[in-house]
Length: 253
Image (tube, rainbow, N blue to C red; front, side, top):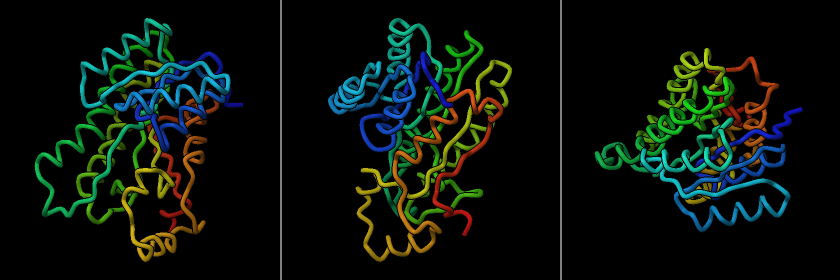
Protein backbone atom coordinates (compact mmCIF):
# COMPACT_ATOMS: atom_id res chain seq x y z
CA UNK A 1 0.00 0.00 0.00
CA UNK A 2 1.13 3.57 -0.83
CA UNK A 3 3.85 2.23 -3.14
CA UNK A 4 5.38 5.12 -5.08
CA UNK A 5 8.09 3.15 -6.86
CA UNK A 6 9.16 4.90 -10.04
CA UNK A 7 7.22 8.09 -9.41
CA UNK A 8 9.09 11.39 -9.60
CA UNK A 9 8.28 13.74 -6.74
CA UNK A 10 9.38 17.35 -6.33
CA UNK A 11 9.24 18.97 -2.89
CA UNK A 12 9.69 22.71 -2.38
CA UNK A 13 11.13 24.14 0.82
CA UNK A 14 12.71 20.78 1.58
CA UNK A 15 15.81 21.76 3.54
CA UNK A 16 14.29 21.31 7.01
CA UNK A 17 11.11 20.79 9.00
CA UNK A 18 8.08 19.42 7.22
CA UNK A 19 9.61 19.75 3.75
CA UNK A 20 12.57 17.57 4.70
CA UNK A 21 10.21 15.07 6.31
CA UNK A 22 8.00 14.96 3.20
CA UNK A 23 10.99 14.31 0.96
CA UNK A 24 12.25 11.50 3.19
CA UNK A 25 8.79 9.91 3.44
CA UNK A 26 8.26 9.93 -0.33
CA UNK A 27 11.72 8.44 -0.88
CA UNK A 28 10.99 5.71 1.67
CA UNK A 29 8.02 4.64 -0.44
CA UNK A 30 10.15 4.33 -3.57
CA UNK A 31 9.71 7.72 -5.22
CA UNK A 32 12.56 9.46 -6.97
CA UNK A 33 12.73 12.70 -5.02
CA UNK A 34 13.81 16.18 -6.06
CA UNK A 35 14.52 18.33 -3.03
CA UNK A 36 14.44 22.06 -3.71
CA UNK A 37 15.03 25.07 -1.51
CA UNK A 38 16.38 28.60 -1.65
CA UNK A 39 19.20 27.44 0.65
CA UNK A 40 21.29 25.06 -1.45
CA UNK A 41 23.79 24.06 1.25
CA UNK A 42 21.12 22.71 3.61
CA UNK A 43 19.28 21.16 0.68
CA UNK A 44 22.41 19.20 -0.21
CA UNK A 45 22.51 17.78 3.32
CA UNK A 46 18.99 16.41 2.85
CA UNK A 47 20.03 14.92 -0.48
CA UNK A 48 22.97 13.22 1.23
CA UNK A 49 20.74 11.76 3.97
CA UNK A 50 18.19 10.35 1.52
CA UNK A 51 20.91 8.84 -0.65
CA UNK A 52 22.52 7.26 2.42
CA UNK A 53 19.24 5.41 3.02
CA UNK A 54 19.19 4.09 -0.53
CA UNK A 55 16.91 6.69 -2.07
CA UNK A 56 17.22 8.14 -5.56
CA UNK A 57 17.42 11.89 -5.14
CA UNK A 58 18.52 15.14 -6.73
CA UNK A 59 18.84 18.62 -5.27
CA UNK A 60 18.23 22.02 -6.86
CA UNK A 61 18.31 25.57 -5.56
CA UNK A 62 14.95 27.18 -6.30
CA UNK A 63 13.27 30.43 -5.33
CA UNK A 64 9.51 29.87 -5.59
CA UNK A 65 8.91 33.60 -5.90
CA UNK A 66 10.90 33.69 -9.17
CA UNK A 67 9.09 32.19 -12.19
CA UNK A 68 12.28 32.02 -14.23
CA UNK A 69 13.94 30.04 -11.45
CA UNK A 70 10.98 27.65 -11.26
CA UNK A 71 11.10 27.08 -15.02
CA UNK A 72 14.85 26.50 -14.91
CA UNK A 73 14.53 23.83 -12.23
CA UNK A 74 11.62 22.07 -13.90
CA UNK A 75 13.52 22.07 -17.20
CA UNK A 76 16.50 20.45 -15.47
CA UNK A 77 14.30 17.91 -13.71
CA UNK A 78 12.62 16.91 -16.98
CA UNK A 79 16.03 16.47 -18.62
CA UNK A 80 17.22 14.25 -15.76
CA UNK A 81 14.08 12.26 -14.90
CA UNK A 82 11.82 12.68 -17.94
CA UNK A 83 8.73 13.77 -16.02
CA UNK A 84 7.22 15.03 -12.77
CA UNK A 85 4.45 12.97 -11.17
CA UNK A 86 4.09 14.48 -7.70
CA UNK A 87 4.48 18.05 -6.48
CA UNK A 88 4.50 18.95 -2.80
CA UNK A 89 4.12 22.72 -2.50
CA UNK A 90 5.68 23.11 0.93
CA UNK A 91 7.83 26.27 0.70
CA UNK A 92 6.53 29.09 2.84
CA UNK A 93 7.34 31.75 5.41
CA UNK A 94 5.77 32.97 8.63
CA UNK A 95 6.35 36.35 10.24
CA UNK A 96 4.20 37.56 13.13
CA UNK A 97 3.23 41.22 12.97
CA UNK A 98 0.19 43.19 14.17
CA UNK A 99 -2.14 44.09 11.30
CA UNK A 100 -1.70 47.83 11.88
CA UNK A 101 2.06 47.43 11.41
CA UNK A 102 2.07 45.25 8.28
CA UNK A 103 3.58 47.17 5.36
CA UNK A 104 2.79 46.70 1.69
CA UNK A 105 6.19 45.05 1.35
CA UNK A 106 5.39 42.63 4.22
CA UNK A 107 2.06 41.74 2.64
CA UNK A 108 3.44 41.31 -0.87
CA UNK A 109 6.38 39.16 0.26
CA UNK A 110 4.12 36.81 2.24
CA UNK A 111 1.70 36.27 -0.63
CA UNK A 112 4.46 36.14 -3.24
CA UNK A 113 6.07 33.15 -1.51
CA UNK A 114 3.14 31.41 0.20
CA UNK A 115 0.48 31.77 -2.51
CA UNK A 116 1.89 32.98 -5.81
CA UNK A 117 4.83 30.60 -5.49
CA UNK A 118 2.51 27.64 -4.97
CA UNK A 119 0.47 28.60 -8.01
CA UNK A 120 3.48 29.00 -10.29
CA UNK A 121 4.92 25.64 -9.22
CA UNK A 122 1.54 23.93 -9.60
CA UNK A 123 1.00 25.49 -13.02
CA UNK A 124 4.35 24.32 -14.35
CA UNK A 125 3.98 20.87 -12.78
CA UNK A 126 0.50 20.46 -14.27
CA UNK A 127 1.83 21.16 -17.75
CA UNK A 128 4.24 18.26 -17.33
CA UNK A 129 1.75 15.94 -15.59
CA UNK A 130 -0.85 16.48 -18.31
CA UNK A 131 1.48 14.83 -20.81
CA UNK A 132 1.08 11.52 -18.94
CA UNK A 133 -2.54 12.05 -17.77
CA UNK A 134 -1.42 11.40 -14.17
CA UNK A 135 -0.40 13.75 -11.43
CA UNK A 136 -0.65 14.57 -7.75
CA UNK A 137 -0.33 18.12 -6.44
CA UNK A 138 -0.34 18.57 -2.67
CA UNK A 139 -0.44 22.14 -1.40
CA UNK A 140 0.55 22.78 2.19
CA UNK A 141 -1.85 25.25 3.79
CA UNK A 142 -2.53 25.67 7.53
CA UNK A 143 -5.39 25.59 9.98
CA UNK A 144 -4.55 29.32 10.26
CA UNK A 145 -6.54 29.93 7.10
CA UNK A 146 -9.87 31.31 8.22
CA UNK A 147 -13.08 29.70 6.89
CA UNK A 148 -13.37 26.42 8.80
CA UNK A 149 -9.84 27.04 10.09
CA UNK A 150 -8.83 29.58 12.69
CA UNK A 151 -7.59 33.13 12.71
CA UNK A 152 -4.21 33.80 14.31
CA UNK A 153 -3.47 37.09 16.03
CA UNK A 154 -0.57 38.89 14.41
CA UNK A 155 -0.79 36.95 11.16
CA UNK A 156 -3.29 38.65 8.87
CA UNK A 157 -1.00 38.33 5.86
CA UNK A 158 -0.14 34.71 6.69
CA UNK A 159 -3.75 33.59 7.13
CA UNK A 160 -4.70 35.39 3.91
CA UNK A 161 -2.01 33.47 2.04
CA UNK A 162 -2.99 30.10 3.51
CA UNK A 163 -6.70 30.69 2.99
CA UNK A 164 -5.88 31.55 -0.60
CA UNK A 165 -4.07 28.22 -0.96
CA UNK A 166 -7.26 26.35 -0.06
CA UNK A 167 -9.39 28.32 -2.52
CA UNK A 168 -6.78 27.86 -5.24
CA UNK A 169 -6.58 24.12 -4.52
CA UNK A 170 -10.31 23.64 -4.97
CA UNK A 171 -10.35 25.56 -8.25
CA UNK A 172 -7.33 23.77 -9.71
CA UNK A 173 -8.84 20.41 -8.74
CA UNK A 174 -11.89 21.21 -10.87
CA UNK A 175 -9.93 22.52 -13.83
CA UNK A 176 -7.31 19.79 -13.92
CA UNK A 177 -9.43 16.71 -13.16
CA UNK A 178 -9.90 16.05 -16.92
CA UNK A 179 -6.10 15.99 -17.21
CA UNK A 180 -5.77 13.18 -14.68
CA UNK A 181 -4.30 15.52 -12.07
CA UNK A 182 -5.54 15.42 -8.47
CA UNK A 183 -5.03 18.56 -6.41
CA UNK A 184 -5.42 18.55 -2.63
CA UNK A 185 -4.31 20.59 0.35
CA UNK A 186 -3.07 19.63 3.78
CA UNK A 187 -3.68 22.03 6.66
CA UNK A 188 -1.38 21.23 9.58
CA UNK A 189 -2.04 22.48 13.08
CA UNK A 190 0.78 23.07 15.56
CA UNK A 191 3.72 21.01 14.30
CA UNK A 192 7.19 20.78 15.85
CA UNK A 193 9.25 22.52 13.17
CA UNK A 194 12.02 25.15 13.12
CA UNK A 195 9.46 27.70 11.87
CA UNK A 196 7.27 27.14 14.93
CA UNK A 197 10.31 27.20 17.19
CA UNK A 198 11.41 30.50 15.69
CA UNK A 199 8.14 32.06 16.82
CA UNK A 200 9.44 31.71 20.42
CA UNK A 201 5.99 31.56 21.98
CA UNK A 202 5.90 32.22 25.76
CA UNK A 203 5.15 29.15 27.88
CA UNK A 204 1.71 30.47 28.86
CA UNK A 205 0.78 30.82 25.17
CA UNK A 206 1.99 27.30 24.45
CA UNK A 207 -0.01 25.94 27.39
CA UNK A 208 -3.11 27.81 26.21
CA UNK A 209 -2.67 26.39 22.72
CA UNK A 210 -2.25 22.83 23.98
CA UNK A 211 -5.39 23.17 26.10
CA UNK A 212 -7.32 23.63 22.87
CA UNK A 213 -5.90 20.49 21.24
CA UNK A 214 -7.69 17.27 22.26
CA UNK A 215 -4.50 15.21 21.88
CA UNK A 216 -2.70 17.69 24.19
CA UNK A 217 0.53 17.77 22.24
CA UNK A 218 2.23 19.35 19.26
CA UNK A 219 2.33 17.21 16.14
CA UNK A 220 5.39 15.74 14.48
CA UNK A 221 6.44 16.50 10.88
CA UNK A 222 6.27 12.78 10.12
CA UNK A 223 2.56 12.79 10.95
CA UNK A 224 1.94 15.38 8.24
CA UNK A 225 4.21 13.49 5.85
CA UNK A 226 2.04 10.39 6.26
CA UNK A 227 -0.84 12.40 4.82
CA UNK A 228 1.39 13.59 1.97
CA UNK A 229 2.31 10.01 1.06
CA UNK A 230 -1.34 8.95 1.12
CA UNK A 231 -2.50 11.79 -1.14
CA UNK A 232 0.41 11.09 -3.51
CA UNK A 233 -0.56 7.43 -3.87
CA UNK A 234 -2.97 5.48 -6.05
CA UNK A 235 -4.98 4.74 -2.90
CA UNK A 236 -6.12 8.39 -2.98
CA UNK A 237 -7.35 8.15 -6.58
CA UNK A 238 -10.90 9.38 -5.75
CA UNK A 239 -9.83 12.35 -3.64
CA UNK A 240 -9.38 15.78 -5.18
CA UNK A 241 -10.20 19.33 -4.17
CA UNK A 242 -10.18 18.48 -0.48
CA UNK A 243 -8.29 19.86 2.51
CA UNK A 244 -7.00 17.31 4.99
CA UNK A 245 -6.58 18.78 8.47
CA UNK A 246 -3.73 17.28 10.50
CA UNK A 247 -4.25 19.12 13.75
CA UNK A 248 -4.68 16.74 16.67
CA UNK A 249 -8.38 17.57 16.79
CA UNK A 250 -7.87 21.32 17.22
CA UNK A 251 -10.73 22.27 14.90
CA UNK A 252 -13.08 19.82 16.59
CA UNK A 253 -13.05 21.86 19.79
